[in-house]
Image (cartoon, rainbow, N blue to C red; front, side, top):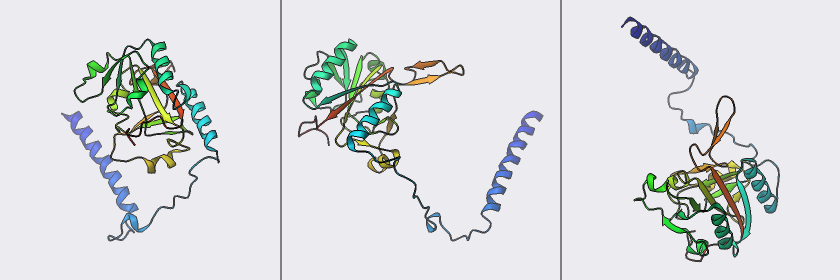
Length: 234
């Protein structure tokens, strides 16, 4: 009991020291003042350098590769054939897709397609060979793909449980240069998933292990043109 009392007392003292410092720092602030009364100047650079759209696509491809993602390029017409080839090379037989994924994308693939409904359990997802999704946008400077749960992307869990993720990025309108450019285009009330390469972690000896908390293999297809039918998701 004496040890517990000492610890509790120490914690209380630390708390009071922190609060005391906060009170002293705010001593000269008028009580009716609000944070918005003094806007913070945010005049930092939004991007690092100027790029053409083609250069932004190339930078995204390089950074994705640096993170050990596999990058492919295609035009809209060639996307179904490429997806079919990549799934066949993987040996994928069961593929999960979000409900809003255009049906034409997998029209040539010889796979069993499961739509990611709420009834699909984590255990059932674990039996899937691959997942195919679109994305909300991609960031070239960081090599990051962002999913937001829209119809062509589905629930966050479908991009985390299957061991192989194929993600389609439209180069014409889904690539931005930087995080500051990305944030205004993302809805803060949506479930955002930021993906920079396949899932990986390292222990204290820097031994890299992939597939710990997400797919072991990430393949990104950069598509020129719009591969969506007119009735597909926006």
